[in-house]
Length: 168
Length: 313
Image (cartoon, rainbow over all chains, first blue to last red; front, side, top):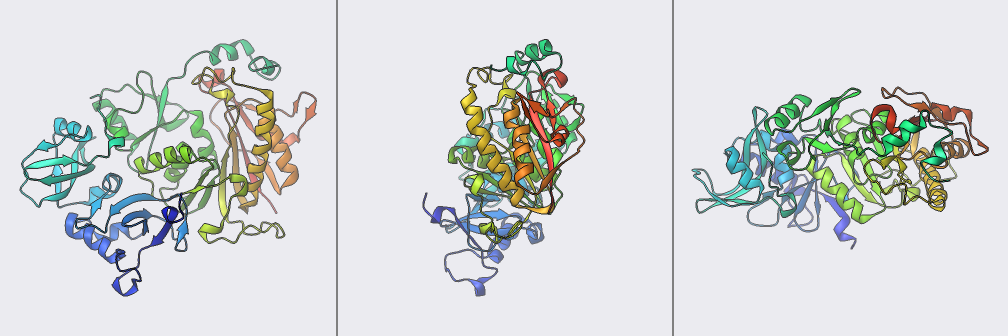
C-alpha cells in the first residue's frame, strides 16, 4: 500500500488557509451540508474533517497533528473534487437525522427495494441529485442512505457490499 | 494432554463443562448506543419479527435464539452488532469514560473497539491496532456500519506500537513510562481460542501445545507494550477466549514481574472462578487470583478469561 493511500490531511478552515487548490475547506463542507440538506453547521462542532487520496473526506472526533499516516481516521464522510459532492451512506445514517431538505421518505416496500440496490420510479418534486433517503423505524424517520434522483427515478446508491435482501 | 481433558483438575463439575462445550451457542447482539437506544432496538426487532431474549447481566445484549443478526433493519442501520456475551466482558470491565484516550491492541474485527467507542459516547479517541490487513478490512466495515467517529485504525504489530502518529513522543525505554499517554488499554490477544468451541467445533482439534507456547510469548510482549503505553494510574484489561493457564495466568505473572503494574479487583456479574495460582508444577504470583475465569457451563456462554491491571510507577 502506498504512503499516500494512508495519509490523512486535515481540511483547511477557510479559503485563506488553503495551500492545495483542489482540497475542500471546512467552511465549504459545512456550507454543503447546510445548503443542500439543511444540516446545521454546529452538528459538526466537535468533529474534524480529513482528506485521504483525492477527494475522499473522512470525519473524526479527535485532533491529531496533520498529516497523519494511519489506516482509518473515523468514518468516510463525503466525496468531493467532483461536480456534485456525494455523502457516504454512513455519513447519512449518522448525521442525516438533522437533514430537513432533499430528504425523500420511502414506504416499507420501497425502502426494502432501495436497500437491495434497485432503482425505482418515484414522484419527487424537489431538486434532482443526491438525496437523503429515510423510512419509518421504531416510530421515527430513520435515514437509510443516499439516493440519486434523476429523470423520475430514485437510483439506489447503496454500495454493493452493503446491499441486503432483508427478511421482513 | 489436550483440551478439554487437560483442565479436569481446575474446572468444577467437569462433566457439565464437557457437555456445555458440545452445545452450539445461539447468536447474540449488542445494542450500539451511538445510534440507537435499547428501546429502539427492541421495537425494531419486534417489527421485523425477530425473537430476542434479554441477557441478565448486561441490558445492552440480546440473545437471538432463531436468527443470525445480519439481515434485518436494525443491523442495516448499525443499531446492533453481532457479539457473543463473553466478548462484551473486557470492554465493560475496562469501562472507559467519554473523552479519554484508549488503545485497543488487537482490535480486528472490531466488536470490542466499537463497544469502547459506544461506552465513550463516541467522544475521545480509540486507537485500534491490528497486524493483519484482511482483518483490518473487517474492522473498518464494522466501524463504518456502526457510525463510530472516534476510532483511528493503525496497521502494525502491537508489540511495537508507535505513539507517534497521534502526537505522542516515541516511547523511550530510557525513561520511566516515557511517552506513555493512554488512559486505558484493552489487550484482547490472539489465543488458542479453546473457549470458542461452541461456535467453532474444530477449536480443540486444531489445538497444539507448540501453538500455545508460541502464542504465549506474543501475548506477554503485547501486554508489556500496553502497560508501557498507558499512563501511571491508568487501567489495562487483559483477556483471552482460552482456558490455558499458559496464555492467561502465566502471562500475567510474567508481566507483573517485568513491568510496573498490579492486578486489581473488579466486579463481574457473571458466575466465574478466580485465576489459578498453580499449573503443572508452576506457581504464579498469588494476585493472579483476582483474574476471572468464565466457563461455558456456568452461564451458558463461551469460555473466557479476563484480568484488570492498574499501571503503577
